[in-house]
Length: 314
Image (tube, rainbow, N blue to C red; front, top):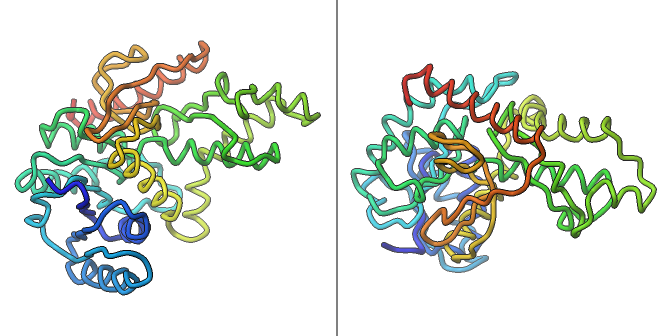
């Protein structure tokens, strides 16, 4: 296993931008791009590769599934595009079919890698990838609500007027319409958000909270409506997850992983605070939730399970 080798399956906007972002990260010395459109993969590899002399030596090339044989991390971004106004759940049927062709090919050539699922609806597809691969749950990871949590921190920092990096807050649950903002533990450098606002004389009512959550939940739809796709921020989220894995950071990120009892949720992959290290998911961390947040999280899990049941996946 080559821990500095990464493969990206799917060279659309997200996959190509992720490749570009990872190229400059210093995490990998070999990147292989795979796409059903081989010429697209070749073109992206050439375009990105021409920038290598400006950074550090990285071998980037278009390959086939055989080239996955010794890859440490396989990132799957392949899937149908989300259309304007289309919910992530509505993507399920067509992207499950795509995964039914991709995942067996990955496993055919590599049974030891970590799988990082980024295609939407990510929680459903992470569960599908887990079932199809037969991998242990800790090695199948979805991007989950890592980006949603970043959007949450961004909007809070923007509203309060504070460095976004000083905001600590989570979005958990489905990456999508039923996601849950964890206000009860949101802080600015250890101070509860509401207390921090009170101290600085900033108006922070339920109306502001609801507006921020609405913005976070609908920002992807707004970006898609304006420019057709969202890919820059998700590429940075992919880089952050990859960094936590390859550097064995034991970092806590709200990725999507298989839940078998934590938060009284079982038999579904869902976005929760999880500790990541070189072997994948190390632990699910149960942060304190108030009753409303617990109820909303359970509703989110139930919504995902219903989709899986309706499709005959569970």
